[in-house]
Amino acid sequence: MALVLDRRAAKALKAWYLLSDRVLLSQFRYSLGLLYAVAAYAPTNEAPEAVKDTFYWTLEHAVVMAETSPAVMCLVKLCLMRFLSSCHSVLSLEYAQSCE
Image (cartoon, rainbow, N blue to C red; front, side):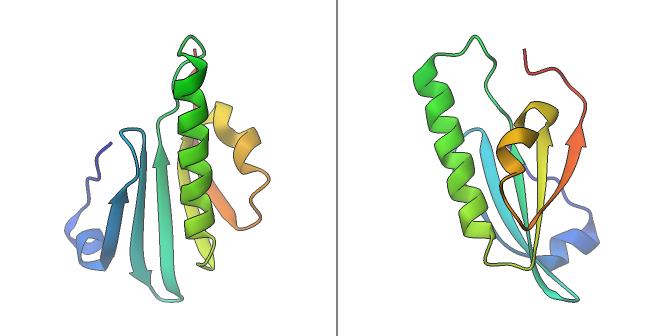
């Protein structure tokens, strides 16, 4: 995972946490307080169950950490939306790509 920011976003960046090689949590200052952004890259369906379980545990941990903020933005594949739909404060920006 990587975080690429323009100058304005870089100035707003307060902290970032690389939770795994597939999940990145970043924290930004904005007009209403703090905004958390969760970037996640899910393993394919062919990945071992242990890899998928670890990924989803880490993603859930990131969302729980971010839910202290009034706004959470998740950058995820469409296949993760079912998982994130249970999170009440998540605003997602999905990109269309197969999970396979």
